[in-house]
Figure 1 (cartoon, rainbow over the protein chains, first blue to last red):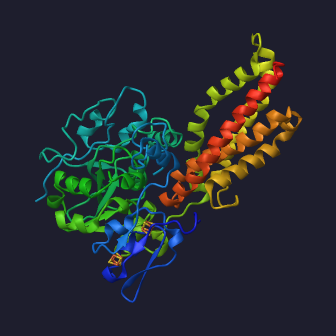
Figure 2: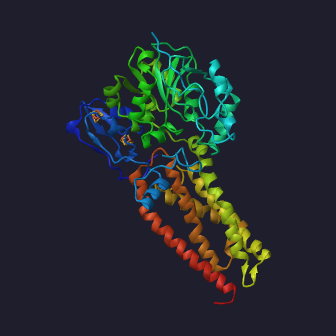
Length: 99
Length: 391
Ligand code: SF4
Ligand code: SF4
């Protein structure tokens, strides 16, 4: 299933990539493939900005504005003017399967 | 050789009261003698803080089978009852008869996650290291950073893991990766992070294949069943607001120039009680369930389409086309958009909606919602004024 097209903030800096392959391993949507010892973005619209690839790239070759894709969290963030944080931990009525 | 640690006992960490105690702990799980008593209802662990090396006992052993209490706890949890109290103590647990060569699997201290993990370990002897994620599942906690590098590093040292296993392999659920920097963990602890499969049930195959996951094991799916189990968590919060809604509807229709009249409250109000239910159903159940069928990529649009479709489909029961036209217009503006709003909340439960996308939707949707709410309000006021014979 694919969400909105052309919105992800995912960026790959190939010159820093060593082809270690960890990004391809951690991405739950198979966004990366390793070709000729370099990472490659296959289908960027599959990216959900979870940030797994970027945090696990030891060489700083990936940048993504990671965050929760959760409407209520983002609305909450807009109201309190802070980063969207998920309500999971705060109250039993919030959706904790979320974010 | 082996250092002994106090493993986490299966116990409820913060017990606000007796309520929900049955869901937290099942006696069948704790097989070490000391654990049996410390489980239910006791707010603090008599054995000391879990995971602290004190040399007096071994990690608690957990079974791979689920007890009846586990099943009941899961159902309650899925329905949204006492969800936040559904935890296990952070620390080290044994499954089967692990030794210093056995694998270490890292998990969250959300009992639902923990139970799913141990249930998939039939026939294996492994260690489970439960991180303190405040009772939140791996995926959520990784996003928040509680299932994260720092917690993992400190839990490794608190449990004395180095003295318990002689290898340097720790297996993390792949969905924990957004919170953990594998290279940092290695630098700080010497342990090598292996990302296991997305689904716990693939762990035996992953280990058997020499810690290799197939491409299929690495991707998240979001099947009809996956979505269906999530719908109660959409329905319950929406339905909690329903009584207030129902009351307002009845008050609105009952309100006459001479006070509240019950007959008109009911005769005018009941179609809207029904429409309210249909709206919630459209947004919180039908849209998630038929997510791949309803047109549009936007959840807001999906919700609106479903809401409108059900509103039209139910017009025979609700008699919406026979209503006063001001009221009818207000209904068609307001309710499908309410479905849309509710459906938008489901972005929080999916595994493929990113923040940038949701922000984009909200930028468009929120002004529309506010405008629609305002217009509907004006229309309802007009309707009431006309009814009173004022306008
Ligand atoms: S994790 Fe970083 S260095 Fe490794 S393949 Fe991916 S981009 Fe390249
Ligand atoms: S942010 Fe997440 S979904 Fe996007 S490419 Fe990285 S790992 Fe994959």
